[in-house]
Length: 284
Ligand SMILES: N[C@H](CCC[C@H](N)C(=O)O)C(=O)O
Image (tube, rainbow, N blue to C red):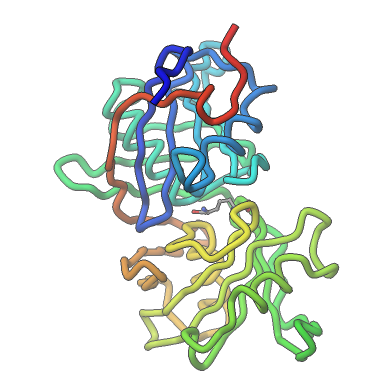
């Protein structure tokens, strides 16, 4: 193997219920925001890159007295997203671990400030999501040739939700993709969630994620959107456990219209990456 010419760039690999991310402390790298999308589209592909559903940069912000730091979040395809529920739990856990913030802190996202609480001594992190917007129930849409009832809400990013009898039976790459691209939603499209009610406290959830362009093992803002819509439809109470494709459980609490997401955030690797080996131009 030829020795990479560029110096190694330190990074962390973490996941929230199987939704995995590369995280970089940008206080060290100082990568300009203009280059972050390109990095995401090179680092995230499995095979030619490190492999992840998204790339997260943590950035201290002395000019922002209202937050402890900000993040820059990018999907695997290089698109910038306003928010990511599982990613926010990973970011909060890492920020606490590297001394960027305390166990309870606030960080800035494009969707707004996120209040996070790292439950010390556990792998759990609880985040308060930004106020849900755009709730719309019962749109009858032609999806892949079938009339489908689709609900919608934005929980930091847009989410369509379909209630199913059996989520395992959903052809998610066809139906999920069709909803993700449907003209009914904003030009940038939406994430597509499929839920199955187990009882008044538990749902099964599968998510086709915008910007990953495929099913992920879990989607935090999707879990929040699904729980909020199921609760609004009277299918579940305000405390909901969602079993996600990866088999883990995300906990959603709805309190006076505010949505909280709790689940594990685990670090699986801390090492160096070699950007040039992924086709990224050498750093200046
Ligand atoms: N792919 C999403 C962002 C990440 C959401 C998901 N990973 C989560 O945990 O909330 C979008 O572009 O709308």
